[in-house]
Each structure stands twice: as structure tokens, then as C-alpha cells.
Amino acid sequence: MKRAPRDVRVGVIGTGALGFHHARLLKQIAGADLVGIYDINPVRAAQVAQELDTVAYPSLDALLDQVEAATVVVPTSAHVEVGLAVLERGLPALVEKPLADTLPGAEQLVHVAHEREVVLQVGHVERFNRAVRAAASYLDEPRFLQTERLAPFQPRGTDVAVILDLMIHDLDLVLELVRSEVGEVRATGVPILTPHVDIANARVEFANGACAIITASRVSRERTRKLRIFQQTGYFSLDLAQGNGHFYRLKSGWQGFGATRMEEIVEHVRLEAPEAEPLKLELESFLTAVRGDGDVVVTGAAGLQALTLAYRVADAIDASPLASARP
Image (cartoon, rainbow, N blue to C red):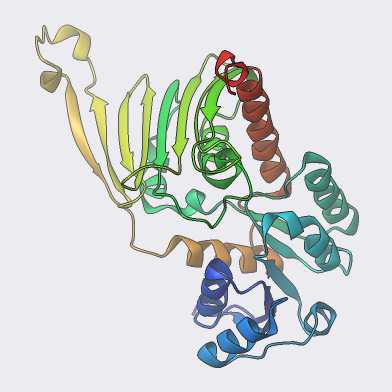
């Protein structure tokens, strides 16, 4: 009989829209003991604590005194300060994406986690997307990728450019799927409703010859999260918003079919994976790593790699002719 996982005493730091869901799910997950929450806004903390029947601690130190691990769901500008407070105590941390708002800050988090030999996981939740999980077993050296992540405008997240707010999800996915050194990066982008870039397009070329075209916008009328992947064995069309997709696989020996239509040389595979809330899977994977029962799915090094690429995209935008034409 399978043994139930031991409970991990965990706390949630930051109880905004996303932090609330961290706490909500940790109340439900087998093997998680939600000790309590902390938020810099005591009114918000008390409200969430009452709604979820947990404890709102009066200070960060008070919460960290009682836990074995913590999730950091504060604004990006505070990731380094709060993440270090957790890691320097020797406590595992799940830090929401992006890992930090600067590369030196991200490097510091990775260094301290390595030095203290504690788990550092980064909240790139699209790794746990149902469509991505369904496609995993069919992936074989992707050569060309296209992503679209479009969203209506909302004030949350606009303290940073769309590259760190939205595009970084797809930069992480592309890095994980291609697994090759990044070569040339070209990009364009413009601010529209904020002082920061609100819509951006990047072309990322890799040392192994793969190429990714990545588009992100937070000024669209409708939400879209699409990922298309081309490889020698076929073509994937993934809808990350719906959590499903399709794989059009080339039939064996298709070159000798004398086919005149695409439909004659491909077979359609509907991609499906078990239904599960991606954030719940992410939190479960974190707790598994904390117990030492599995590897960290999105390491601090992976989070740093995605952030490094995000800043290369931002630098390419600043160097583009479109940027020089701005008033």
C-alpha cells in the first residue's frame, strides 16, 4: 500500500490575487500543512485568513519561525528581499515568476540557495499546463516554435514591461523545449498604455539551429495563449488556455506514398492529459522536492536563464529602429 506523504509545514508570503490561490490550494493538498500566511497589508491578511480558516502572522519572521518551507508571492520588486529572508534561514522557497526584477538579484537568490543547499523553485506554472504535459511524450527536437500570449489590459503587472509580465512564461517554455544555447536575439516592442513596453515580438535563434518567434501583448481585446511546435516528425498546435492540443504526425514511409494532399501523409493525434489545476501540480511538485522525494521541476538556475533571456529581449527592443523612432 502506498504510504501517504509526510506533511510539510508551509507558509504563504503575500496574499494578493495569486497568493490567495497558493493558500487555498495548500489547504487542500495532501501532505501540506498550511501553517499560516503573512502579508504586508494586515487588513488583507486578516480577510484571507478568515476566508481560508488559517492564521495571519503579524510579521514575516513570526511566520518563518513556524514553517519548514514557504511560497513567495509578493510583487516582483520584493522577490529578492523576501526570498533571501526565507533562504538564509535554510528554508526551501517557491518564488513566483519572474525570479527577480534584476539579474544580480536573481543570481543572489540562486547563489544563496546553492550555498545553503536548500530547494529553490521558480513559479513558471506553464510547465504544468495540461496541453504541455500531453505533448511531452511526442516531443523530439523541436526546430521551429511560435507562441502568442495576448491579454486585455489590467493594472496588475504593469510595473514591469510585458516581457517580464507575460512573455517570460513562453521564454521559459521555449528554453525547456529546445534545450540549446541561445544565439541571436532580435526583438521589437512599444509602450501603448503604460510607460513600459506593452506589446513585443522576439525572434530567438539557438545554437542547434532551432528558432522561436514569441509574441506577447497586454493590450488585446481577447485572451490568447497558443504554442505551435514544428519538428521533423510533425506539427503541434497547443491551446494553453484550454489545456488541449493536436499533433499532426507524419506517417512512416510517407515519402513513398505518392501523396498529393497533406491529409494523406499525416495522422492526427488528439493531445489530452489528466485534468488538474496547474498551480496545484506546481505546489505538489515543490512539496515533493522539499521532502527529497523528487527533483525540482523549475530550478532557480532555470528561472535565472529565463530572466537572462528576457533581458536580452528587452535590450534588443531598446536597440531596434522602432525604439529609436519613439518621441
